[in-house]
Length: 111
Image (cartoon, rainbow, N blue to C red):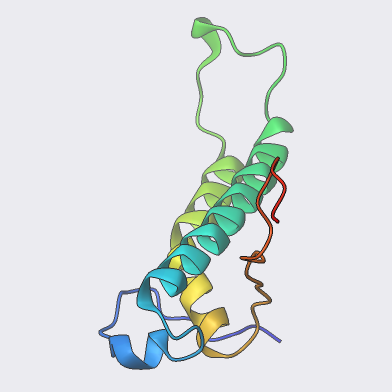
């Protein structure tokens, strides 16, 4: 089942977006990290699909348009942007996140 994610940005109430974490800045960090994960996964997936079209024909003499390659690229262009996917996942409670413990100091002893 495919999720309905808007392809355009929409106005959101910051108070509602910050409610799960209690802090808009923490929410923004969570969303940006998730959006980066999504973008990286999409980039790897696209590169893997386009890798099939590479070969010994990468010379300047043999530049041609491959319809299948174009369709794959257009498919990814039509997908919702990673930040919109991350926001949708966050709003629907589909993201798992945790905060680092504040009582531990890296490399030091607390007495």
